[in-house]
Image (spheres, rainbow, N blue to C red):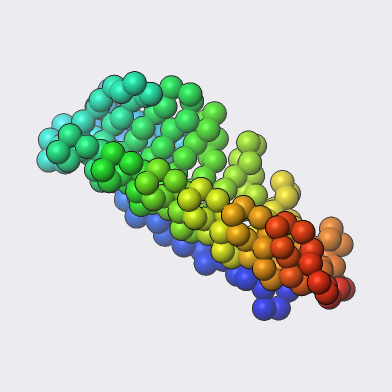
Length: 208
């Protein structure tokens, strides 16, 4: 990455750790006599087994499994609303693991589509909002940065399917807008101002 480029903070791993503070290996799960097979929750193809699942823990956390019109919710509730940590499996094949408030995705979470990760980051009122990472349909990271109301907004980085940086700069309403650098495959990059996803005014060419 060129000098002075936006460097994303590696906090995704931290909130994953916070979110999954009860993750253990499959071997550890099998050794724990309090965990029954029917209480295990397997998260897609990631190999994670999550449990606040033992019956005593479930009772303490008011863990509830509830079938709704658009899917099944398993997790905590407060005053008959989703609240705290929970998992929602949607009928359209999506799955959300994370924090809830007032029946909506609020806080840190991970969204899967067709068994592959689609987004990990922060939500507000069911929308991507705050820092997060977006993945393509094959599970490759294609954007890391900030969102507002489900749209890329603020500083961010676009990647191709091989993990190479395509664009490093600012976004507004899902479009490149503001100062940013566009990278060629040979490492050269153009830096300048963007407006409505298009290059504007002068651009400087930096050779690798």
